[in-house]
Length: 236
Image 1 (cartoon, helix red, strand yellow):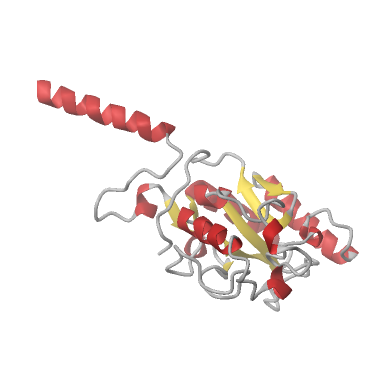
Image 2: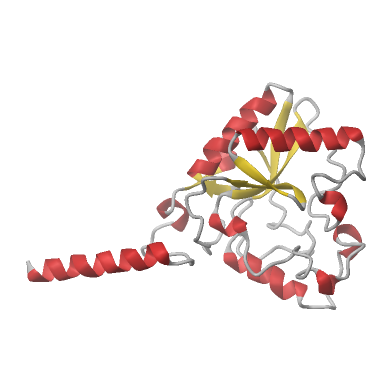
């Protein structure tokens, strides 16, 4: 009994340390981390959701696959998936749907971005993604950071599509363009594009997501289950 009591005390202490930690707790050996922490495949859970994980491939501002993405799937906390499903249902009633570009992002992917940002020679995609910005300013301007809300599992990058054609709706600027024109409130876009941004934003807000003022595509669940935990398990 004394041994059992001591073991329970140790487990309780470990649990307390884990809850206060800002890094991912270790998953038991042989267990898939996404299952331990209740992350779901949004593409499988939400009918009609289009998944185009940009960091799994080379069509992104770095120009190559990013560390930590071993499958083109959108992992999100179950709470975020449930709220996103409500957005999809609402947009479907308007003849529209959702396409996701990024969801859960491992910490190692954020580190990969940071290492790329510190390399002044690697600017192969500048013309497409940051044409008006000096790469050395990406940290200062907030486009690249040492931490990302995506690593907490309840943040995603998303746009809208036309259900009939499957084409992306005009949002006034492409995904991941590092430029003030990508700010949701930018007035440098057409009225139609601005209306599309506002429709996406309003629908996401009604489903308990909050927007980011610098990126029209970026949303975070208000009551995210892991507000202080930055996970690093790979996407697979």
